[in-house]
Image (cartoon, rainbow, N blue to C red):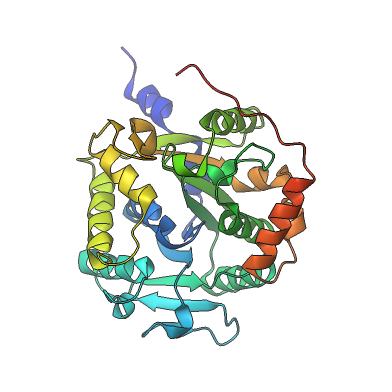
Length: 323
C-alpha cells in the first residue's frame, strides 16, 4: 500500500511548490476581457491558503468612459474597476467579476484594468502595481492555449494581447518576482485555426527545459470548480445582451461533462477543463519574435510587428496527431 506521504507527493504539481513561498499574488487576465474568469479557481485555491490575492486584466472595455472606474494618477492606462462599474449596458466582465466576488466574499474587490496598449506602457503599469502592492508572483491566465506557442506555427490564433501581456511581464526586473503562465481551454480555439499538435509539441519542449509546471483539472463538486461555474454564470447573466466568451462557454460546458460536436467551432472534451502551468520566463525566452515588441506604444504597433515578424519567419507545416 502506498503511504499517504507518497500519495500526496505524487499528486502535487510543481506549480504548487513554486507558489508555496509566495504571499502576495497578482492573477492577471493575459489576453483581454473574459480571460480573468480563468483566475477564479486559482483565486479560491490561493485564498484558502492565506495568500493575499490581487486581480488584473488587459481590458477590452473603454475604461475612460466607464462609470465608477478610477484612473491612476501616474499611469493613465491603468484603472481600478469594482462592482460599482457593473452594468448591463456596457461591456465589462471585470466589473461583473468584482461584483460576484463581493457577493461571495465581502465587498471591496477590485480588478486593476489595463487599457489595450503596447508593451512599454503596459510594462510600466504592471511595474507600478507590483511595487505598490508588494507582489511577489504574477500568474498570467490565458483563455485557450495560444499564449504558449512559439510564434512560428502555421496558426498562432489572436496573439496581440497575449503577447503584449507576456512581453510586459517578462520585461519586469523586480528581484525575486515569480512569473507563471496558466492556460485553460485547450480545444476552444478551433475557429482561430490553432493546431493542438503544435501546442502539445510546445509543451513537450518546455517539459524538456524544466519549464512545464504541471496540469490540473477543474472538476464540478469541488469548491474551485463550482466557484468558477457560478462566476461564469453570473458574469454571463450580467452581460446577457452583450458579447460573452466563447472560450469560457466551452470550458464551463466541458466542466459539466458535455462532450463532442456542438456546432461550428465547438468540440467539447475534458481537455478544456485542464489548467496547464508554465514558467513564463522560459516561455518568453525562446519566443520567435517577442523581443521585437518590447518598445511598442500601442496595441496597433504590436499587431503590426507581429505581422511583420511572421512574414520573415520560416513557418512550420501544420501537423496532425493520431487522436
